[in-house]
Amino acid sequence: MSSKPVDFQHAIEAIKLDVLTANTEGFRQELPKLFNLFEGMAAEIMALRLENQKLRDENNRLKGEQGKPNIRPQTKNKDISSEVERRKIHNKLKKVRKSKAKKHKIKIDHQKRLSINKRNLPADAVFKGWESVVVQDLRINIEFLKATYYSPSERKTYRAALPLGYEGEFGPVVHSMVISLASDNSGMTQPAIVSFLQTHGIFISAATVARILSDGLDPLFHQEKNDIMQAGKAASPFMHIDDTTARVNGKNNYTHVLCNPYFSAYVTLPRKDRMSIIEVLSQGAELLFKFGEKAFELMALMGLPKKYLEELQKSQTHLILSRRELNCLLDQMFPNPKQGLKSRETILEACAICAYQDSPEAVSILICDDAPQFKLIASLLGLCWIHEGRHYKKLTPFLPASQALIDQFLSDFWDFYEKLLAYKEASSSIAADALSQEFDALFQRTTGYEQLDKRIAITFAKKEELLLVLKHAEIPLHNNSAELGARAKARSRDVSFQTRSPEGTQAKDTLMTLAQTARKLGVNFFDYIYDRVARRYLMPSLASLIPTSRLCPNSS
Image (cartoon, rainbow, N blue to C red; front, side, top):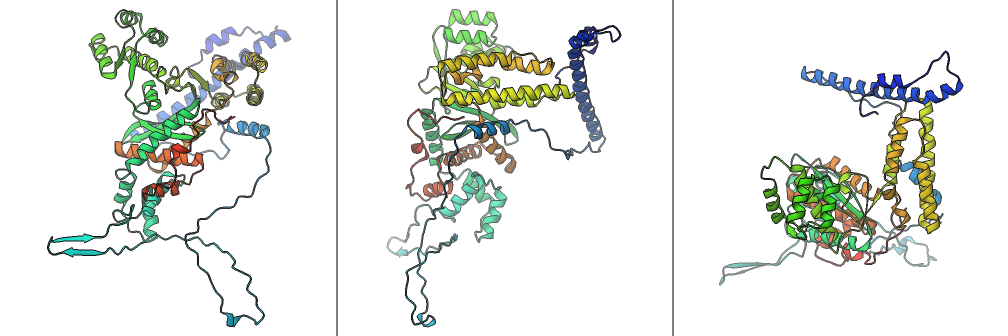
């Protein structure tokens, strides 16, 4: 859909076509202009219709009436995800493997032998052994009879201690079930968890469930989340990142998803600017700010006015400051708090980026979409091909001829994507040069459909980021890992609209990190939580299961 009104008068005057005198060649040259004019008019008409309907709905609401109901059409909506094409190509290229039968291993807690009354057997019956039948059941309620002694001389009562993990009214199974049902893919609401447990004879209140999931969460889990992020970043030369909206006590926040093939971590912050991204990558450590030539180059690139840039170059050379020290410097440069907000933010971001890139734990390659907050932070940026393909599927031409042009281009688009996948399996400098030239040919073409040609030119400008795989064949071509992580957060948001406190937000991020990481590592989340809640510590930490090598599996 067109983002700005079409200058129809100018467009019509540009079409130099006389239907009475023009020859075939004249029609051929001017026909694309007519098609583009028609597409622009159709797009603007649709935009005006939507705006007109919104105004009508708002007018009706102001009069105490209802607006037009949002009724979905019976026809199937256009799929713009681009995931179908990716899966087709991936399934086509991956090797066919024979499926192996999977046998679920059930832990046997108790074994009981069942005998037969021999009086009911014939005289020649011969014993042939024991036949195994495994029956699964769930036991929740336990009654502890604690020995109690009273000392008259000390006037003191002595009671036997409960086993570890059984503090309070509820045991480790209940605690683990509450956490698992809320944080794993089951995603049950807190009222549903209360109803489920009460149905099974556990008389628990909604306040207790909320306390288990927030204030009562063991600090050990927060430490394990930090360990997972530390080990995950060390195990991979690249990281995926994405974000999705979140609500905290009625205010809009953003949950940032940081992941790679071994882990997924969630961090909710009030903003999603570059400072927030650096904070996520730094795991909440105190940020430093570094001045220098590199910082000044970034400031110029990010649009800092020349007068401020020259002032900094004269007074600041290679200083490394804390946030408080830099704020004092900026307060001197911008004494009026209402002025220079953009310049102040630019200086903060540029200095923070330089300090972060010089840290030993800096991520070298960041895989993401083309949102501005992800740019300039890592040394190298890899853009998602699946996300890029969605832009073309969002085009809504009115004419069949324009739709045919999009269909043909998308076919060529995914053919090129398939060649990139093949390159990842067998990379070479010759193949890289050939693919680079083919990229130029594909994204410098002119179709005659104006909106499509503009979109192609935008993609061509991202060549370096889209073709980073030619220099680093180990990186994936898409950002699906982070998008799937964000989708898990979105499902959780649908179940529980918001968190109420910073402690609850932190607890939710921690439990989602543990649940999604356990899934990636093939660890049963309930067993893992139960092992920690019961103070057994028999299972290794999730961080210890992440490989220590930086050699990552080749993802397509």
